[in-house]
Length: 85
Image (cartoon, rainbow, N blue to C red):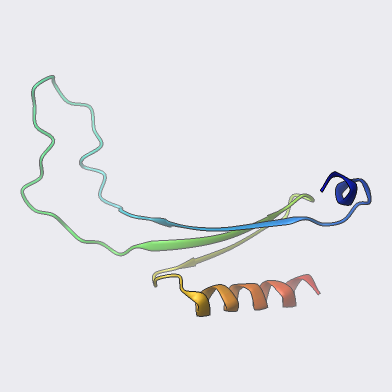
């Protein structure tokens, strides 16, 4: 890897994650002994993120509201390839 970087080659790292919740009522400061329970559980939309970051400082992001499966990753990779060429 170090040889590739010394030659000025572009190295791209791609990862996928998801943001599981947008309801942060459980994450709060409270008095000792107070419960953090919520009587009603709201199910919100899940946001998935695919990020490609290279050693030249470029970042390519994709945000979706669907589960990331093989088709979504292939679409991201094909669009990234088009963008890079």
